[in-house]
Length: 639
Image 1 (cartoon, rainbow, N blue to C red):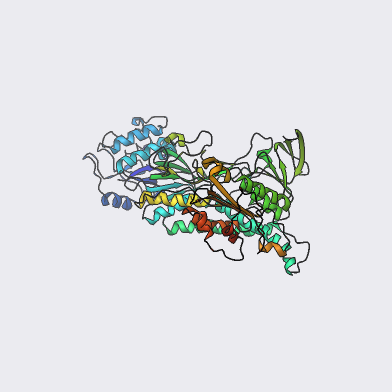
Image 2 (cartoon, rainbow, N blue to C red):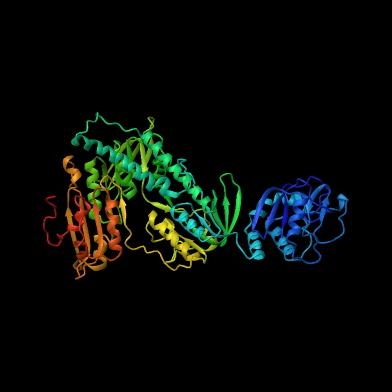
C-alpha cells in the first residue's frame, strides 16, 4: 500500500481533492510518500509515473472493488489515485468546487484517512492548499503512527534507545548482535553556558574520561617534584599550560565520539541526532536542532538519558555566572582562581586536579564530604587535599554571586559555625551540588511511566522495567541504582540479552567497586563501616586496618599520613568480608582485583592465605591483622 500527500499545494483553481482529479502525477512532482508496509514516511522524494506504476503493480492492493489503480489529472496538478473511489470526473466549473475555506485539523484528516484505509468513506473534502497548511501536524501526529501500526501489525524498530550514553549504547549494540533492528536517538542540550559535545554521554565527554586525564596531568606535576629526589635535574619553576592539555584531552574525546558513530554503523544501528519525546507508548517524536520532526515507532523502548548537573537557581547569579562539570573540561583557557561549591566526589576530584595543576582552588562544603561513602575514609581524603594545597570552607553556603568590573566573580557566603557573612572574589565558580535526571522533555506522564516525585528518577524493577510494559530504563536515570558507567553498561547488555537472547540473568548491584580520583585516590567495594554496623550491629563485625607508607613515597619524602586501608568483616567463624576500603596510589587498580574475591564471597581466612606481590601497596591488604577493637597501633613497620 502506498499513499501520497502533496509536497506543495497546487495553485491551479481547478485542483480537486487529494483523491480527485482524472489522471496521474507529473514526471517530477514532489510528494510526501508513505509506505504502511514499511512503516515509514519518505519526505521530499521525487517519483516518476513509471516508478509509481511499478510500486502499485508490484504489490497489488488488497482493497475493495471500487478502488482502482489508475492515474488522474487535476487541472495540471498531477496526483496518484490508488485509493480513489471510482466516480465521474469532477466538474471543471470553478464555481462547483466547494472545499472548506479553513484548513482541516490533523485529527479530522486522520479520521477520514483511517476510514479510506479501512475501505469506507469517500474522497477527502479538502483542497490541496488546505492539506498543505496542515501537513506538519498530519505527518507528526501520533494518531497516524497508530493507524499505520494497526494496519501493518508491526513497529519500525525492535528496539529504540533514547540516550547515547554508556548504558544506552551498550544496550543498543548488544541488541544488534542478535540481528534485531535497532535505533539510538541522542541529543545533547547545550549547558547554560553554551557547552555542547558529541555522542557518548557524560562519561566520555564530561565525566570519567576527561576527569581521569586531567587527574593524570596533576599527578605528573607531583611526579616532577618527586623526580628531583631521584636525581632528575628539572628547571624550576615548572609551568603548566592549560590550553595545551585541554586541546589534547578534547581531541581524544572527539575521537571517542567518532568511534561510537562508527561502531553503530558497523553494527547496523540507526543513529538519530534528535531530542525525543513520547507520543504514545510505542512512538517517539524526534526533534532536530533545526526544528525538523521525525516520528519513530518501536516494539521496545529503553530510556537511558542519564543526568545533568544541578544549578542552585535560588542563589542570585548562580546560573548567569557559574559553570558545572559540563563546562570545565571544555574550557579553552585556564579557569584561574576557582571556587568549587559542593562536597561530592565530582567536587573533590575537580578541585584536586585543579590544585595539582597549580591553580588556587577552594572547596565550599555545607555539611559532610562524600556523602554515601565511608566517612572515616572521606575525612582522610579531605585531610590529604588540605595538606596538598586545596582550601576548604566548611559549614558554609553561598548566598549570591556578582560580577565585578574586573570580570572577576564576587561570592558572598554564610559561615554557619561562626554566624558570619564573608566574601571573596574568584575567576571561576563551579557548582558541584548534585545531578538531576534528564527527563524533562521525555513526556513520561503521557505514557504513564512512573517516577520518584522527590528525585525525578524513573522507578524500575529488578529487570529494569518501568511501570509501562515494553518501556525500560537503565543508568543514572533510574531510582536506587549507582550512578556509575560500568553498572549502566552491564545493565544495558543484560537487558538486551533478556529481550532478544532468551536470557533470564538480572543485573546484580551488590558489591560494585568504585574509586574517587582525588590526589590520593580512594577505592572501595562493599559496605562502609557505618552501613555494616547498621546492618549487622557493631558487636557482630570486625574491622581490620592499617596505616602504611608506599615505597615510592620514601625517597621523595612525601607525607603518607593518610595512606590507610581497612577491611570490614563479620565476626562469625567464617568471617565473610563485607567491605574493603583503600586510600593510596592507584587505588582503582588495587580494588579492582580484590573486588572479584569479595563478589565471590571471600572470607578473611582465605585472604590471609593469599600471597602478596612484593613490594606493592596492595600486598598490605593480605597482611591485615590488627583490629580496631584491639586498640593497638595499626601503623605498618618494616618493608
